[in-house]
Length: 80
Image (cartoon, rainbow, N blue to C red; front, top):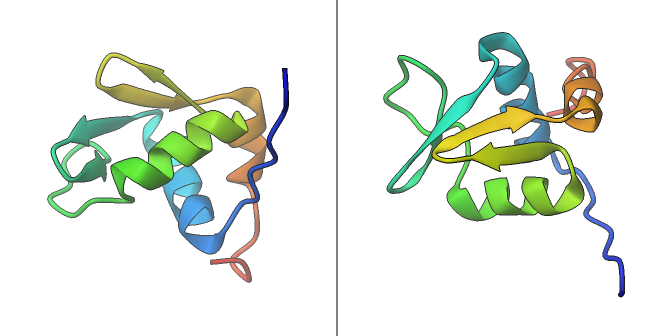
């Protein structure tokens, strides 16, 4: 089994910070949304990369942070 490395990019950090605040994000047709939002926090493709990298876990239509994702979302305001 081969392992791939997924590098965090600024768009991922923004989404991870939002998922830390709200606890989860919801998948809709064009991306992931935090509760009450009408603008996507990130695309579904980017969310899939974060799942692949171990920062998010998908449960139904919800995406929740893993322990790794929780700490990645702690990055300071200079990132993003």
